[in-house]
Length: 201
Image (cartoon, rainbow, N blue to C red; front, side, top):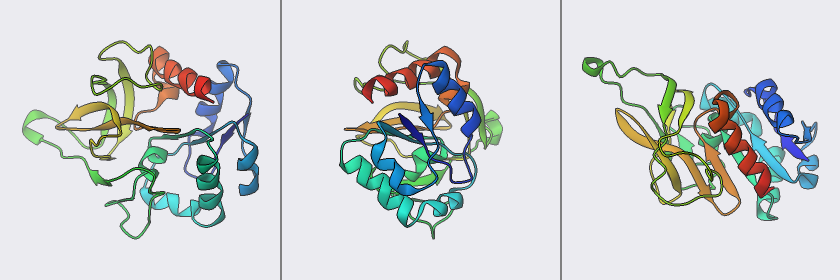
């Protein structure tokens, strides 16, 4: 069973629909303790990093405990940003800290019509290293983004995307995964990412 975390900032309906189409059994827990029985945990999200403050306390502890026990964790968009140490968007809110680095605002270039927020389809550069999450994706696969802040390119980066500057569009370390794009809105490539995560689970 896949546990889909609802903290008031998620695009739960579309993520649940995509997972169900792939045959997954999806549950939205009412209490943090329910995370312990999940075969995989997904933290979705859209909007301001401050929304992740709702995950402080028992939810944070339950998710971290599940990860430490070996349960795969996938962060989507804002959920991926929460995997890092924090964000300049809401400096007073701490991230989960499972990934090294800090989330910063994308740089726009007016002369080149590179706008922020970054909204629309863009390519994944998956040449960094092989990964379980992106297995089967074609080089330069196009996925759908909508965000103004992004993670740095670190050793955990398995795909980078360029919007004025490169940023981490997917990360993976052990049983921890994250994507800045929305796989539930990214057609076949996005479904493949979710399929791969379910295979890990």
